Image (cartoon, rainbow, N blue to C red; front, side, top):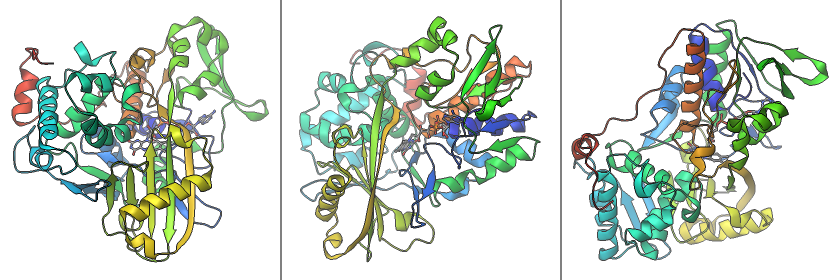
Length: 468
Ligand SMILES: Cc1cc2nc3c(=O)[nH]c(=O)nc-3n(C[C@H](O)[C@H](O)[C@H](O)COP(=O)(O)OP(=O)(O)OC[C@H]3O[C@@H](n4cnc5c(N)ncnc54)[C@H](O)[C@@H]3O)c2cc1C
């Protein structure tokens, strides 16, 4: 098994629990891949970026449960949006049943006019009426921006509501985002069930969430080997015969699971196979999009809220890392996050710090009085694959034309965007495929949150809505 990100870890743990002897090879010194933490030269441990989960991420919760990490995730049901005029919107579930539980918060969303709020309500209703059937019709092959314009959303509503939610959820700009993905976010997180939108944030550095993974694999005679970079997969008679390591070493196994990012997978797969199998060749068409995070340490407490969502600025979220993490004080360490941060890629780290610090000072007045002790920028240029219109057809299945080779990773065909939930889904699907190949089929994938209230009626009612 190659790659100890969430895809490789979830698959490895599930297969170990099913009785397999797993050997997990990871090139880095730590587990968790893109969702991990590491130490700065001064010893400060930081996440490579704040990672957020939602109530609708049922497989990620299942994985955290298996490895004893579920209790390390704090849940927040109150979301605060702050715009450039200083308006604060609080989004919280009312006692109304789904899909109307968030409607009162939306009705009082102060950053938009009444007609704009009404039109957002109409578009949300039209999403709810689809009952989650977003894989057909006008949602496929069309951009989210076009879909919103067709559904009479104003430019203000698009930038101050839709874009605020979707750019960070899907790490892409609306013009490059397939509408199907955008509609899925609203259906799964905001409409189908009351708990879908509840934000989960780790109380510990991301790396600590994976402590139970090594034990789960090693207790069953498996191995987790870090600093073990795989250099290629060897092929014989249309099967994988081994993985090539440094120094001419080779490991062989009954089954091989490649759980690395898609660009790395293309480098490891034998060239002949990539050239001859469309499933592998097409992976090249997947594009990537960047995320930038800026970490600030102040000399005093500067923020009371655990996190806020920011409108009208480059910064999209501000996380109060001190308050979110155990044992880090009240509000001195903050992290600003910018998804789809194409505009920052060419800018220097100091320019990015200056830009985001200026925005912090506008949003959080306490930061104006405080002294900035240190700051650092993490640019992830290939943070996730880009959910562009049509991108689903380039995402390969976890099964491959080679009978003993399987794929996992947030970029494989899961139906979900590039998220921790998507990575765990891919890991479980790959493990299911391996179990089936051994004649021991087992269902590992957890179902999505069941639809509730009127949302359930629309799931059961198959009639297409004429307004969609
Ligand atoms: C900055 C940032 C912010 C994000 N925020 C969120 C968020 O808030 N919520 C959310 O749900 N998702 C978020 N994501 C997405 C999430 O992190 C990923 O979708 C998920 O972690 C992907 O897991 P994976 O196992 O598919 O891939 P990876 O985590 O990339 O794991 C692949 C592993 O393979 C290893 N590897 C690669 N090549 C080799 C080799 N040759 N030999 C051995 N090992 C190798 C890598 O070192 C890595 O550990 C974010 C991602 C980034 C980058």
